[in-house]
Length: 384
Image (cartoon, rainbow, N blue to C red):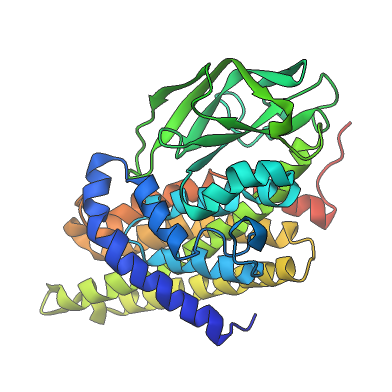
């Protein structure tokens, strides 16, 4: 889709923010295995970057999804994928249903401070035994008067150790798996909520990832987002936006990996000439760049569909699948041209290699994307 001067002006603002407020600290945050989410989000909130497509009455900018897409893509300028992912959880994973389906009172209490950056959000969907198979979650929320009592746990929760609230998917009845779930906002300081541990990962080091427990956690039923029993549907809608976010961010990050590799390979000499002057090297880089541009075209088609109110599930799944593959293929291929320096922890290509592996897992594994696509093609076998 065609971007306007307003899109490009916003992109310049984001690039300036990254250069001044994120990239100078990325090495420090990676080493610490956490970044100051409230500080970074607070600064972003003042620039209006956390609510670009959120309702104006709750502090958002009221723009269409293409502006949020520019943010996701431009965050590829960050020297690591962890902080962008944490931002994406705040803007495009934990809050879409809150913005579109929640009551005005709930949006005033939680969406408005998430947009301003005063509150950090996390999303509680995956569990130890339920990753991509969302329908099989075990966390429950039983009615007790005007409240819900929540029991269970969530796993791989980005922002989980710093979050002020978690949007939790829980079973609120014993009905069919796709009709018995609800999304409920749970303030993290509620009695019974505990961070069991902060998880160490092979990449995405500067984003905190938590395992959460809920033990007889009491929250008012008014903290439910939308209708009871519609949580699975709302979460599938959120996944569509989340998967496009992942593909957009990959499309912004991967050109930087290629450019860094070109710079390094041009300077590195072997057998009397630059590594870049070998046909295999420059042909391979040309091929990788072509793949990345194909991903970007597919992803922006999905963005245009969302802007036009069309169902982008199939295209978003395709883009997510392709992004996951390229987030493995591009850093791996580029790392080879760095030689021994590519295997050094501090090099930018090794960070991309570590961080990129998550894309094929988080937000629905590659195999789930293939299931969705094959269903839209009409070739997925019907259940017996």
